Length: 102
Image 1 (cartoon, one colour):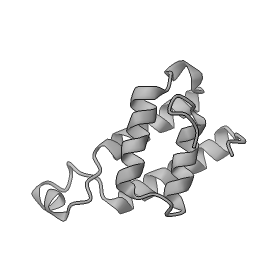
Image 2: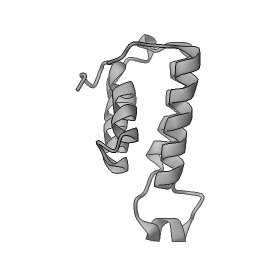
Image 3: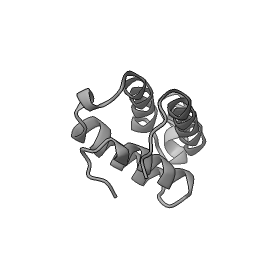
Image 4: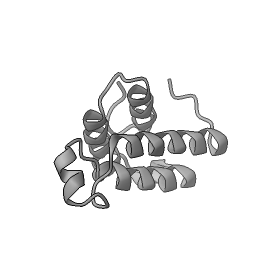
C-alpha cells in the first residue's frame, strides 16, 4: 500500500473498498488518516481537491450501527451511501483526471 502522504493511496483505498478487500469502516479510517491528516493539499489537482473533499464529508459521517441511523438518519452515512459516493468520485476522477495509480 502507498504511504499515507501519497495521493495514490486515496485511489488505492477506493479500489480496495469497491472490490471488498477492506470494509467501510477501514476505508473511512484510512481515508481520514491519508486525506485529512497525511496528504499535502498542494499535491492534489483541482478536481481531486473537490471530489476528495466531498468524499471526506461523506466518509466522516459513516456509521455501521443501525442504532445511529435510527437516532438521526440525516446525521449518519450508510454503507450504501458511502459506496455510491466512492463510485461517483472514481467516475469523476476517471473522466476529468485519468491517472495511472497502480
